[in-house]
Image (cartoon, rainbow, N blue to C red; front, top):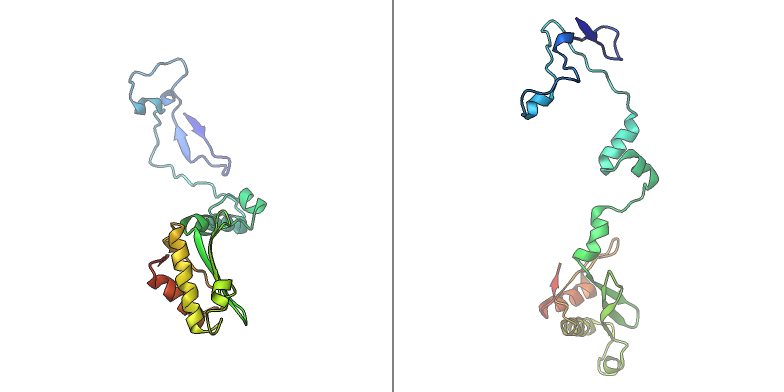
Length: 188
């Protein structure tokens, strides 16, 4: 009998008879997929112990969490996530609202191409002389209505707003967004 040993241990976990191992000159007698495997006689008195792999735990865990190979994670550690890469295509139109001490500015931009779809500001000639105040709640309602109308003209019926860090959607900003929503624009 022949004995096949693993390189990790000196004892022989598998004992195989040499007459059961197929030779190269013999043709398979059957055309099934099982006939391509060699017929091995494994005895019950043998105990197989798999060799323990040696891994660097830090690199393995990092590669598992990032779903990238270790070499890829080492090359580009600051790669953007799936959401960061696809968000600009899933929600392409972004509302940008800015409040200065004297005026209210709002615009809708296409994120992928950076094209401005619609703009409204209380600093424009038609609003500057007609509104009594350029920064109050009434001015925010007018800006929201203008943004909604101009976005509909440009065939934009859904947009998104991403608040900045520590920014709440309330007060004047809430009035602008609610007015846009009331005039038929959907926020996603």
